Length: 374
Image (cartoon, rainbow, N blue to C red; front, side, top):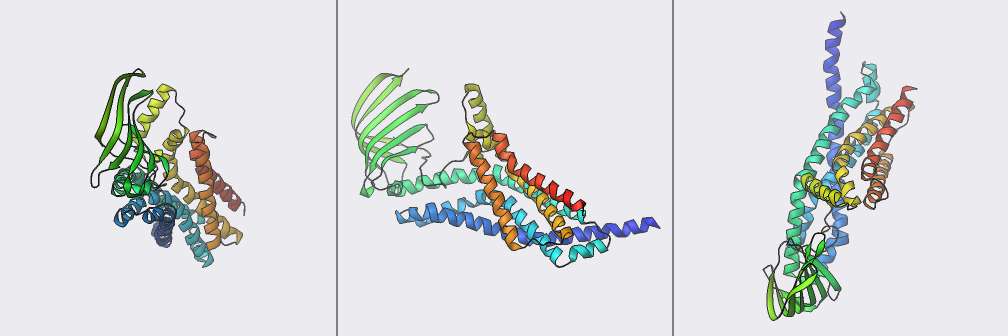
């Protein structure tokens, strides 16, 4: 007689798990859209709006904004999941639906299975975004930045001094001053070599980016080539042209290359070179661990969220919208602090990357232990 009861219980458990997922999933999509919108709006207000004010083409700025969405989504997924779990399970507890499940013979711990499965899916999705869409979007961002600068050099800062561009050929292009109309003054182009003195230095009195092209025209300049830090040839010229390739520009955070956005093989090879040369690169080492720690945060936060829901139900307390919001921002603040400490070398990269996840797991384990004692 026991066997039929077991067979009847299994479908009931699956129905309960599907119901839990149906409660959390809409909140996950809503929270994800809200967090992405907040990150994008913050970027628009702080960095992209000044570009428009300086005369950058609106269509290029809009494209730059859209290309930041994949990175925002990858960062927002774990946070949105925790918010959705806290709010969704809180509603189930407030409406006595968890109590009804217990009365039907379903233990409260059965909440963990659907939530952790969803956490695993979110982890895989966040990792796929970080390794797939985000690096490609960052490459396109650099291309759009170059188009913006070539369309209107004024976006680099009208009248500002010592603006520096870098291109894919390893050249640092220093601009002494940008004048109205896109005229450039006091240019210095240095061709760099890894770990070695410059191979070539070009100076020019003035220059201009040719509209619609990637060519920089130079006037009144000198070209000096070096070998073992000693000048080999010196050539003066009245006019000349310099083709640019994948020019990087400082247009704000949307333009700043973050090591965590590089593909894993690229980041690993760079770190291998740094290890061989004995170079300290805390930002890159932290980014390597963040490649895995950031997606895994979805699982850690899912575990914490369901543990808090079980504890709240058994203690008779309810986690409402405000508490869910506060806990979500508390995790984001913790993540930000540890990440900065890792990038600055105050903490080892592995500790800085995994510490927020570990805090969430330990807090969830403590809540689970406390709820078991009730």
